[in-house]
Image (cartoon, rainbow, N blue to C red; front, side):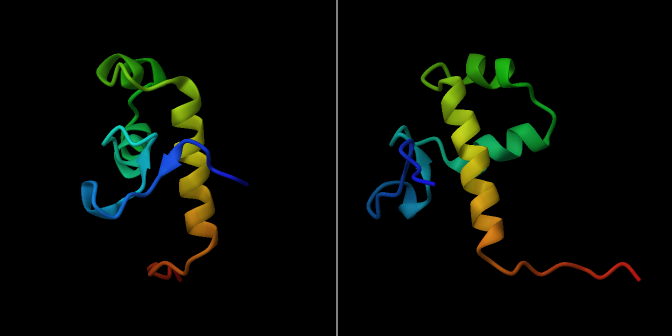
Length: 76
């Protein structure tokens, strides 16, 4: 999948993936969803965001997890 709304600029925001260069990190958006904040509330808080930005941020996060091993605690 090509992420057209996710931008990484080495000299902006420390090079973290941001949405359309708006200085809104993908991680911030994904964390807000994880915290139970609704899409409508996010769009109200960040008026430059569009619904597709949120969907692409979630897809980007899913792809990032798919591509890496994360340290998880075994539940045995």
